[in-house]
Image: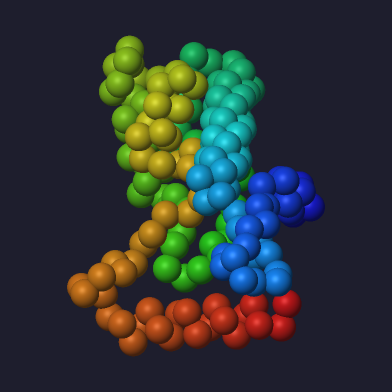
Length: 165
């Protein structure tokens, strides 16, 4: 977090809002902050993609095969080991079993369309279904279709959880 604070401090501008003001107000360029967030997001996503490629490659080598006997259970365990287990909010989550199965099936039929998977083809499936995303995905509808009371209850739990920190 200290790195973020240092980057933000570099972008703080002090401007008098009114010519008659004695004090200057601190402003931050929102475009610069968004650029920093995007840069961090891309670094984390690239790291996760490299981890997935190495993990699948290692699984194939450990089994001393070309991917033919590499099953969904092995792939699911690999992805579970790479993803965080707990989401910071009940309204979002990381990839679950069905998403991992979809990426696995995609990797079987994309590219070479063989009975085995290739690390790059599996990475394409992970990218298509958001497994390589470093942030959790929304799993509750946050619009008029959702149940507002349930969402409000979830957010109250979050507030209570982080209030003491």
